[in-house]
Amino acid sequence: MSQLPPQTARPRLRFRCWSGLIIILVTIGISACSQRPKTKLESVISAGELVVLTKNSPTTFYKGPDGYAGIEYNMVTAFAEQLGVAAVFQIMDNETGLSVLERGEVDMIAAGLNIDEKNNLSLRYTPHYQVVNHAVIYRAGTFPPKEAMYLYQHHIEVVANTRHIKQLETVKKKYPKTSWMEVVDKSEEDLLQMVTEGLLDLTVTDSNFFDLNRPYYPDLRIAFKIGTPEKLAWAFPRIQDKSLYEAAVKFIKKIRRNGELARLLDNYYGTSGVSNPVNMSVYHLRIQNRLPKYQTLFEKAGRDTGIDWRLLAAMGYQESFWNPKATSPTGVRGMMMLTKNTAKSLGVTDRTDPEQAINGGARYIKELRERLPESIKEPDRLWMALAAYNVGFGHLEDARIITQKRKGNPDKWADVKRNLPLLSRKRWYSKTKYGYARGIEPVRFVTRIRNYHDALVRIDEREQSSQQTDAIKLKAPAI
Image (cartoon, rainbow, N blue to C red; front, side, top):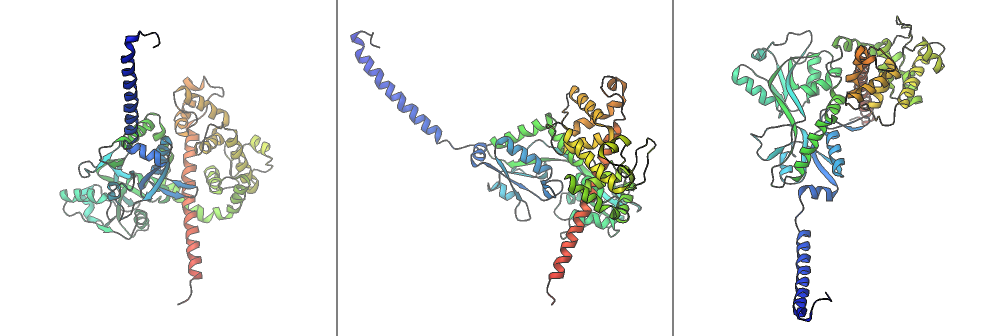
């Protein structure tokens, strides 16, 4: 600027004036930008929490023995972590429905809602994450209806205010004789129990709910499905600001694409439909007449190793039906079916001794779990340790390598279990370090143990609840 001729002095002064004006305008613009209302997504991030309306159910959100769980809980928590905020759950009841979303008291609903854009114009749904059906449930040994036109011949009870009612109403339009009773004082689990006990002919429930409860009601079956399949999704208010909704859409698409959604569903539903109902009936009987003799040994082994004693008991049942003298054609023996070499390495001198066998099996599964790479997290770590217990650590590693070659995640059981059966195909096992293995066996092994464990947990929790109730009754003053 010092090189400009004198006649440029006035323009230079004028330039300074414009410069000042520009600074003022920029300052005003920045101020205006800072006063711009935050988007919904920005507000959630600023608040540091995502407030979600859900409902208590095994298929959505519940508190289990190891903390909170459920499909919705896991998905929402992962979504909140991606946003860098905490997930805050509010339970939906008869008084807190969709209106709390419309009033802005919650940010979204994750409660197993089916996409119903025709009737819920105030909601905006994400892409679906699961498809469910309405299943008619009956007890094995009875004579269920073969199709919907014969439902009128049976006594049916359904929980009031559920979407099953709408499906039954559709059936009734076609078959006017169809009738049912809507109950408000019972849960869907209560109705399943009534069908099991022969106190009720039929009930209707979601197929995914029945899948979760199948191990606990081994005598129940699906007669047929009514209505049309429903797609479950998250719901957001239909407002102009779609920022949070769009973030959720991207999240759902991402976990679909990278396999996380499939692995999550497998974690909850992977055991459904696999266990033999007759075997489960026998299992329930043996829990009563055989397990008590060995329960204290399983509990002690659980305390010594930090492994749930009910899981160890489930392993023992899968291996030997809790028979301490069991022997296989290949020479493995005892309640936990230890090989001679494994028993020797564990210091087990008598594999048919229940205490030695249970303790040895518990220590062996603990060692296997500790040998796995740190990148494998729970519960996948436990499922893979169980697979290694059955097929051997080397074969499991071969399957993980194959999984990686096939673009799967070698740290996820849902991916590895799809590749374990390949160990029996020459095309694959010929390229592995440890060679041929009957890879389908560890898959079945893990699935059955998960079934047995889940059933035993449910029974154990019921007994504890009953004992607490009895204790309360004893403490109550006489009237």
